[in-house]
Amino acid sequence: MFADVVFVNGQVITVDSDNRILEAVAVKRNRIEAVGTNEEIKRWIGERTKVIDLQGRSLLPGFIDSHLHLIGYGRTRLSINCKDASIQSNVDLIGKLQRKAVSTPAGGWIVAAGYNERAMLEGRYLTRHVLDDEVSTEHPILIMRTCGHIMIANSKALELAGVNDQSVDPEGGVFGRDESRRLNGLLVEAAMDQVKHAMNPTEEDLARAAEIASRDFVSLGITTIHDAGGFEPVNVRILHQSVRSGRLKVRVYAMVVHEPNFNRMRQTCLSTGFGDERFRIGPAKIFIDGASSVPTLATRQPYETNPEDSGILYYTQENMNDALIAAHRDGYQITAHAQGDRAIEMLLNTFEEALRQYPRDNHRHRIEHAGLAMPDLIERMAKLGIVTVPNPNFFTEFGDIYIKHFGARSDYFYPIGSCLKAGIVVAGASDSPVSNCNPLIGIHGAVNRLTPSGAVVGEEQKISVMEAIRLYTWNGAYASFEEDRKGSIEVGKLADLVVLNDRILDVTIDRIDQLRVEMTMIDGEIVYQLGKSPDADDELEETVNFIM
View 1 (cartoon, rainbow, N blue to C red):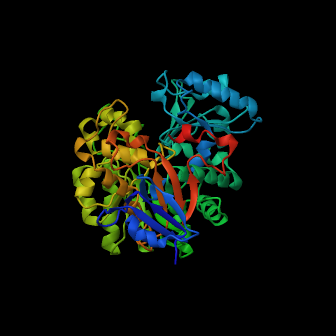
View 2: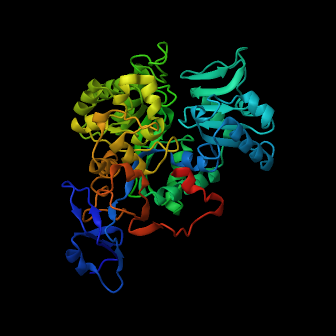
View 3: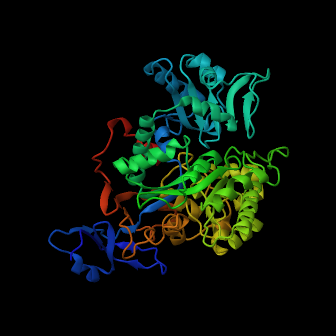
């Protein structure tokens, strides 16, 4: 029996238990049939076998991004991209918004994403009054900060959301106000919710966004994503339908976000693991605190820059226990967005209580981000068997912010080195669209931990290139209970593979982020080849500018 596809003459990084580096791989249908030397794999080549000569380049397991927002990313791609090089100031952004308003029917939403006031020449936020005066009062306008935890809305958007000067700050959120106590359009954390609901995208809008995201992801070698949720319960249904219809090429492990949603899911008797090799239900997830880059994350000690500020919490310990312990009892893997050490500590308390009440082996409960994870928390994580899901790509964009606001504590932002030494399984993630979704940038970040200014955040937390590759392959599979079927190049596993344009183990570590994906295979099918884009959309040819 011959193979359908054979890769030869490569640096085959198996990510197996011995981290073997081999030369060749044979694929039959959607499975890996053989792995070995060129000579050993030669017997799998028949007349109809497609032979791909890697010419020494790296072949890796398909990358797994263990925390991103697929539909949110796709909708961001359809928005004005504030990270584009042409936008250096608020004035530049205003110009883009004005041009968009001219081409958008009155009442249509105008959205900009990836905004960072610190990166603008003015160094300050836009306000609703500026948006009203200089762009439009006939269009609802929304500017999403890059962290995803703050937005700016104009008066029309606030009106549609039912928010006005008399609105009271919601639990876990703040409405920004000017000196006269009138709303200035700034919406922080939970204060964003009403405006998000007012946007009310159609299901076709969401499916289109998912399709765009999938296309970008496979071009970066991402073959599986752990979707961290968005747009309420419809998010899970749209993802499932898009996978079934073929609009989504990537495999999906879908988190069920917010307590009311996974309570409804529990009533159907479905929980973590339900599904197939293309789509599975993932963990039950809540948000505990804010973002690392604003910052609004909840810390045990105040920020270095403000002794009166230690972040925002969405839950009390009691409410968190009520939400997650019930999900644990009913078979869910449970997790939460927890960036600050105070939030992480609370989540560990919940895990301990859940396991005390309802003991379970191999639960693999997770901490999404696990940002400021101090040594005492790492020790508790290791004892509990927790999987952490940090964002090493954040160093390349937000690292200087960590140093500014947290001083010496910044060395323990995403402390991957300490976690690995403690025996914790660490799964790499981008949190896209918050930051760049290219896994090679994540690997680069984990190895170098360099900030935009060139500083190193936590020298002792650096890890090897092989360890970093494992974050985005086998460890990601482990985080979804799927390491027996993907995450490494071994016989019998799914044929999800990535070819790079060079040898990742041999390039200097400062060049890892310059590597590119040349080919992506999912389920034995080549779904992406550099320079060949049969599904390209002329309206969305800015992909490289957006994701690189």
